[in-house]
Length: 89
Image (cartoon, rainbow, N blue to C red; front, side, top):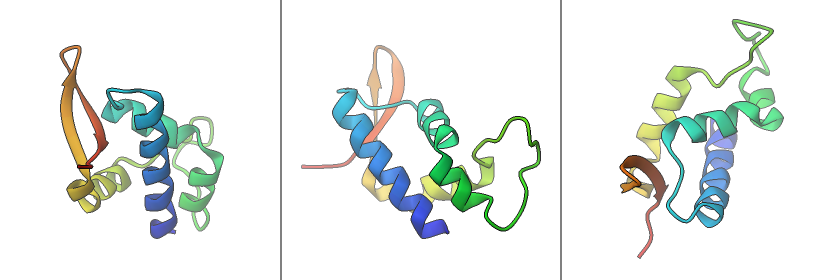
C-alpha cells in the first residue's frame, strides 16, 4: 500500500511540475492526493476513514511520505509562497 501511494505521489509531482512550472504547494499536493480515488482506495483498503463524508489523506501519512521522498524534493519560492518540485539537474 505505502509503496503504491509513494509512486502515485511522485507521478502527481511530475505532472504537477510539468503543468505548473513553479511546482505545487504542500496543501495543493495533499488536496490532489485526497481527490484521487486510487490513492484513497489504497490507503483505506483495510480500515475505514475517520469521517465517511469527507475522506482525506491522513496527516501522518503525508508526514511520512514527505520525509521518505525528501531527498527528491526541492522547495522554492513562487510568488512569495513555498512550492515543491522534483529535484533534477
